[in-house]
Amino acid sequence: MDIVAWEKYLFANLTTIIGSVLVAVCALWLARFIRNKLLNLFSHSKRNQALKLFLTNSVYTLVLVIAGITILGKLGVPTASLVTLLGASSLAIGLALKDFLSNIAAGVILVFQKPFEYGDLVEISGTLGVVEYIDLFNVKIKTSSNEIVVIPNGMLIQGKIINKAYRGKRRLEIIASIAYDADLMKAKKLLHDIVLQVEKVLKDPAPSVAVSRLAESSVDLSVKMWLKKEHYLEVQGEVLEKIKLIFDKNDIQIPYPQMELSVKKRLHS
Image (cartoon, rainbow, N blue to C red; front, side, top):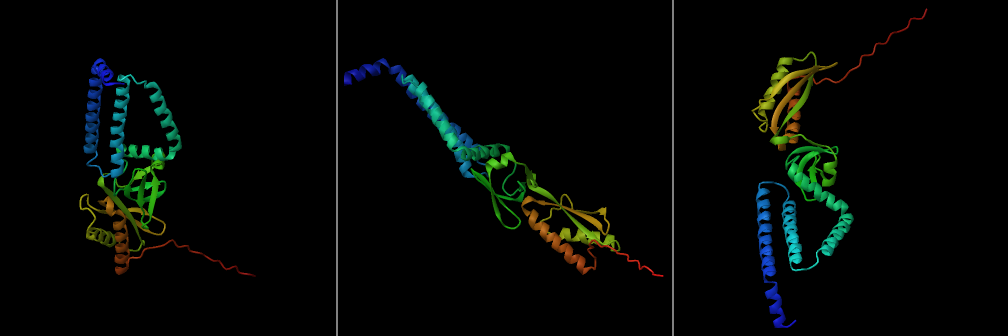
């Protein structure tokens, strides 16, 4: 095509070309605008950066792809076959990466539902621990034995999630058992005092100590306290240790189940 032919083509399709350029400029502006808005929306979230970038870039790319197909259509390029090809390619890729995409989709759901955050004490699929890391594909939980358990996001949305530290704090309850002949009021005061000595126990709501059950061989005392979710396992161990030490120091027996056997001697005539 010579220069004259190009000039005729441009003159005949000037309106279409200008419209296509305007569509491209507007699409680029809109894609950037939406991406920036999403980044601002997620800026206060502690979710993994990879997940934020994946969501924002996916929307950005989708807007540009739609704009590109629209521009090609305005320029007279048949887009039906192109859309069909993109659809078939997407289906093939989706089947090949089924589990991979399932975890990503689950990660997106977790972003909006927010069943837990960093530092929450959760129980997932029978695993109890603190949420250490939220990834694009999985969640990492640190157990009390200092093990890191990696759970794919796809498993999370299919199973049951128990958040034991929702909204920043959690109540800890410890059952302390004493013998029936122990001084009940003294034991209650000792328990209350040691809980107040633990720095990470919250003062409001105030800790409480009360009789919870009269068992077969013990009087069970319920010691309740509130603390920040990230301190749960640490405080639990500290309080249990203090209870044992203070009971030993004050000769308060921690009973254990006992069985009495009565043996009758048979008299022979």
